[in-house]
Length: 361
Ligand SMILES: *Cc1c(COP(=O)(O)O)cnc(C)c1O
Image 1 (tube, rainbow, N blue to C red):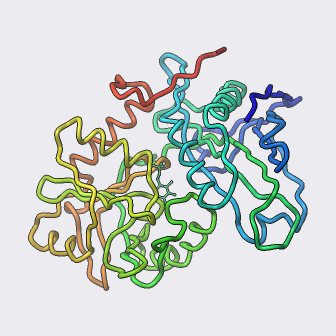
Image 2: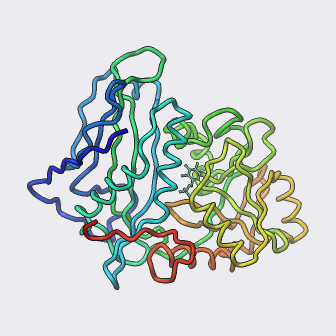
Image 3: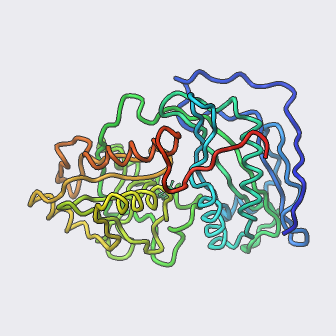
């Protein structure tokens, strides 16, 4: 891959920015976007920042038919006090994008170069980053296959894009535990499948189970393994942690679980606090037993969107299992404060996780 100069076409008029209380998640987009193309003979070419706009694609573009596409999600935070913009472990997201791409037979991007393009894009749209507590700029890098061809085979052309969306505080009314439905019929991912990749098909395949959960007044689905329906995988689109008798347990990376950046950060934080943490196979029966003996202390999910989401109830075969009196646990609260403190620059970052965006590099 050759270094190519980035072309920048600025918009001629800026869009009106929404009020901070209207933001929600992924509803508004900034003035600019990044795009580059891929062709077999050229590799990735023509990197450019252009005004945010719709795409024109051939109806036969492969992405519409066989779903050869991958995405990422990360956040930039803007501090009210020093006006700095901070990215949280952005290299990890581009490394993971390439892992997802590899699984979907999509050509890799240059991780460092794409991070530099992202920084340029954010500099241009910096005024869109909200500064109120809990708010951030959600960054969505993604790749679609564009070759107009109905053959079931990898595309010969692609587009890589990055769009930016100011998002509101996830916990506008304070952090509250959610109820989750243990899903016994539908599967999110199977051994040898695409569970470790952020690819579109994994997410729409989960809607049916999510509908079931909502019908039972639960916020999310707890996914069990696709083979035996016995071992815990994830909660919704988050990784999951269980505190049992003072030890924190999380499912090991089995190949059908997403290797979350937040998961990784939680494990590293716990180790730095000398809280024992184990990555291993965890069966749902073990969790039910632990709740019956009173050993199950806390359950929480982790992911970029919410950072951390406490679980107050598990619905398992019509049996309701209440966790920690349906209250946010002390460890969950401590982890949330530590992570968001580092992300926003409110506290020191001894791990070197944050990248501060310089005005001109
Ligand atoms: C993105 C994602 C996660 C969380 O990953 P983070 O890097 O922490 O945001 C967990 N599970 C699934 C299925 C995901 O798509």
